[in-house]
Amino acid sequence: MELIIYTDGSARGNPGPGGYGAILLWGKARKELSQGYRKTTNNRMELMAVIAALQALKKSNVHITIYSDSSYVVNAIEKGWLFGWEKKGFKDKKNVDLWKIFLQYYKLHKIKFVWVKGHADNPMNNRCDELATAAADSGNWLIDEGFEKNTDDQLL
Image 1 (cartoon, helix red, strand yellow):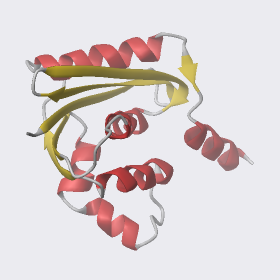
Image 2 (spheres, one colour):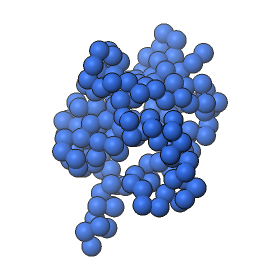
Image 3 (spheres, helix red, strand yellow):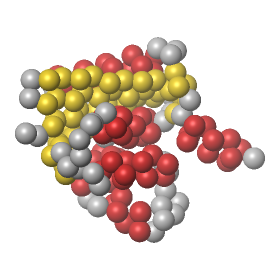
Image 4 (cartoon, helix red, strand yellow):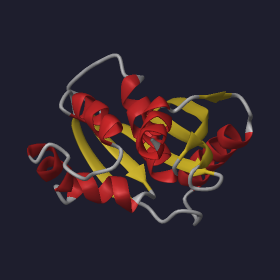
């Protein structure tokens, strides 16, 4: 059986408060995930949604299709950019902390990414958007340490 995952990320301002939403579908089972962060970017939340979904899995070697409206995430994997970045030590790339975490989980499974048009007629993508924006607006935020630490470093 294949696991289907839908993901979305949101940031209110870029950077600003953000959140992610993910839906995991396994047969008739369904699980929704979301979390907000006090200061982050949209791309980080798009990637964090994928990571959170993969971290929720209890098995490895799962066949997974991930649907995302993030060209940044989908193209990085499906066009092979990420693997070139990795070979070059992520030189001059953003979100390196999250890409490294993603790769740890990616290598445990057989994953295919599919881009879907955001804010369109896909009910699962729309639900992920609702989860992500509600998390961004919740005020119940975690700290995106990878983003805030890098931001502080750049200001020094």
